[in-house]
Image (cartoon, rainbow, N blue to C red):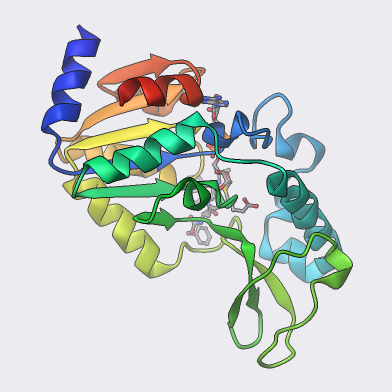
Length: 237
Ligand code: BV8
């Protein structure tokens, strides 16, 4: 029953939106936030992924991000990322919204994507706002802004910070206009990203949720596919 429904929806979809979370990068060896080996287990989000933490101890926050960069630099896109890049090639109307900052979707080939929480390989000057690509793995060498000499922070959205308006607008409008949303590897806890499937649902979209365990999003999904992104997503193709 589900397979026929999914096939029909994939075949006839006019506008597909994909929403991904840390779970899609788990099979690339990147720890998720709330899983067994979760990133937050060793640290608490409040301690590090907040503007207050950076204000109080920028070195500690940069050390944590450079530790994550080192893990990400050794990771490559898995079959789940690759399937989503292939999906983009098959539909004229397509948008990938990712909560991940690891950049693996870009490497896999997705072009029409919104990195709603930013990108770990970018820095932003706290003084002039200049954004630079930065691949430094040693937090002591992050350096200062090339334009004004100001302090640089990771160009990611921290807890308590608003999502950049343009990105949020793009995400809300895509969620409200798509007729198929595939949600892959997110616990559906972090707002406002977690509200996107609910917006899509209210606008009449068919929701497919892929996760190794049920989440609040699975409860409203039309189909919940229990399993790993790296196995289920290629199957959808
Ligand atoms: C904001 C960047 C306005 C940094 C991140 C309403 C209600 C309650 C709280 C709030 C609310 N509105 C705002 C808040 C506060 C907060 C929030 O949501 N808190 C949560 C903890 C309750 N939100 C914010 O602060 C947001 N800002 O709302 O602005 C505002 C302004 C001022 C004051 C207040 C509000 C900003 C949130 C952005 C935070 N930044 N990342 C960094 O990465 O360092 S969030 C971070 O968590 C990552 O981006 C991550 O992606 C994201 C969400 O987690 P998931 O991706 O879902 O990962 P998780 O580990 O949780 O789950 C992984 C899932 O994968 C699991 O379900 C697992 O089962 C599954 N899985 C694992 N392996 C696999 C798999 N599935 C399939 N296959 C596998 N192999």
